[in-house]
Image 1: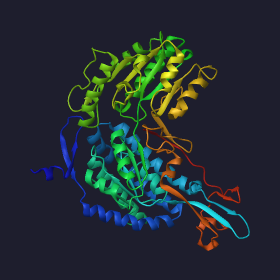
Image 2: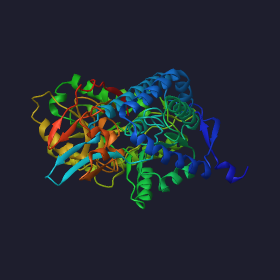
Image 3: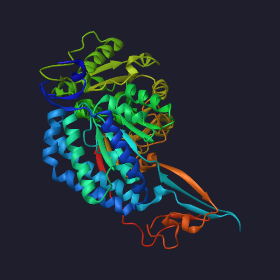
Image 4: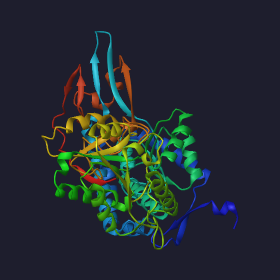
Length: 516
């Protein structure tokens, strides 16, 4: 077999055994160009559709995914090893999220519609328009929630942008099957051809990034991959919203571990959180600060010893986990670290290392993410020094703070140091559950993401796929229909500086909780 043939397929592997289970052919350059042409044509149609129309399309997709829930969960497990219960729940969450994003579009505030009569001769109208065709690079660790139809795709479609998604090589067969269901359902529901499509293969993905037709890129994955995409797209001035993840910290105050029960509860929660999904969550807590004498490391180590080995997603992730844990052990001065990979396939054993504050310096391997079930414990003597170390960490997606309750005097000071460094702080809770709501922020300063002002989960996710425009001295007939006095889309508008809400008001929106 020639090299050209070898590189023309994304092979599918079983994480439980490492065995190959078929593969998917790469998309040809001509096929990619055809998809791009259709997406451009679909873009003008989508931009003119009402949010309610797009909501009906996305509702049909959500229903179709649920109809195929068992088939898709089984296929996903064959390629990810994440287990059927987790995968069924993730797919159900994806369906809920799809409906949520559609309802955000129907509510209409994402359009930012406003108009002002400046003087007798000057008027201004401002609103957001869809950017046009979007490319999404899905994640390996959430084949439904952040895969070829998840948060990024659903929010982009809700904002009236056509999407061409790149299949992740960790689950190519699943990607193709989901894409087929979504594409056919959208067409049957009345969406134009080109609203949604999928490419397979590294070169096909780069062709999308380089195409003048693609106006925005969303990515979930490694820092290396995200920054490479950002740099490549920067040549065209195209924004890349990359969620890359880092070491998410947790901080425990003395009041929170005033007795052994507090230590035990936090230790158990920490282990449960950083080993969830074999530690392959972007919100995984990777470093916990706890007072010296609390017994936190010993308690965490006991719980880690009880965690069964679980398969990692791919052979590459397994290899990097083994090398990463070896590097962490060396940096922590642990010469007796146990084997990271055990059994057959890509199975990994959970690991924990004790570190000192003095080791947490810029450039240390201890401050870099290791994807998988591994975490660090730092027991501090000096609370001020611990807070300095906390504030010196690189940007993160999320953090946890465990206190002795609302009256804990340390809370305000800790939050003041943490909030500039992370996208979300969970008080007395772990960050691995992400609720998809109007108030969610799933992002963070670089290197957690490439765009700290953005979120990939929650109502704000639509803002990545729109751009503001203004029209001066317009004939009312040239403005979008939602500026008309009757406001047929029933969206909020700001008229001469006064916020005007639609009548009747929008139906209350429900939230969904997903894991990411």
